Image 1 (cartoon, rainbow, N blue to C red):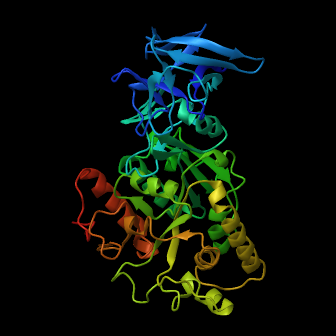
Image 2: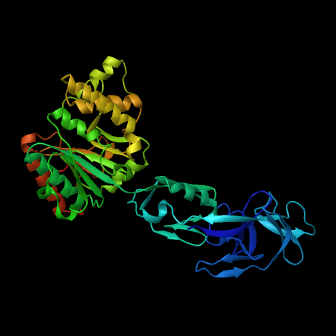
Length: 457
């Protein structure tokens, strides 16, 4: 049910507001929204404003009904001596007219306040924030207070109404504005094969929860119907399984892009894919926030000096699509390719076309038994660069590469990484190295590791 109120609108279309501190009338809510500048309401030909507790406070001026028709009611506003005049050159409505003409008339407007919006039932994240997406939201009679930012209700009415069917909302606060997103994250994995893969999955999940502080939903794409032994107890209520199948490495790689049929996936944002050999080293929300504010698909480039002999560059490495680019006579403007073990994006709409084209190419490769090293990664590099849907800037610096002896940070990044990807560790050693790292990181939780950390120290 909608709450109906009546307000006054001047000759230029501005709603009339009352400044409680200055004790005067204003055109609109002002250059900066404030709890002290609130709309004038009308009931039974009386003007008043509404305190936060719902108390009606009458105003010290009178309304004179000038004209009335089936669709409109026009008033003049008097302080007992003069009539109020709304001059476009002034933000304040002054009482300085002896007679009533155009600028001295104010029309009654009916306003329906929405009872629901995306701010009602969701965590929100501010576009420019670096913090976790839970905001303190206080809805008042006259506006909305989100942490320390106040938004006038009437000036944001259309935005709030539109937000009911959307995943984000833009709110005005005078001359400024802010954009908020629904924050309902999903992290998903693909896990097929033997117990080693599932033991890696377990370590990644432990790190996600106990180091990354993740509290959201998790989807595991797998062919096993029962993986309870690999789920940390604190995550048991948050994990759900999507049953799939993979008869080859290529089909396993393809599965990370075939997500449109996961039940309910359309409600999540942001969404983050992780390989099972990726572990958290810091709070995961720092990276998730970057994924939700990016308009493109966030990935990590393989620019980690010293970790490989052959650089992952588009003009050299098959694993990042060299053959595809050469055949198409097309080369990206950036030098380094990205690793497909970490893929973040705002929501399903962000990846719809890109993932469709990746799946199409992967299906052709599988059906024709074509051979490409790390084929999905090569395809993804080609497709995302060709479509210009790749964001290789937002999260690259947060991803490091782990080996038996060192953690290699992204080039020129000196802070502690959020994620560590152990793709450069030999498969025979990977589970022991990963589990040892996670155990050490939990033991020393709160300590920031140096950029090059020996997990065995």
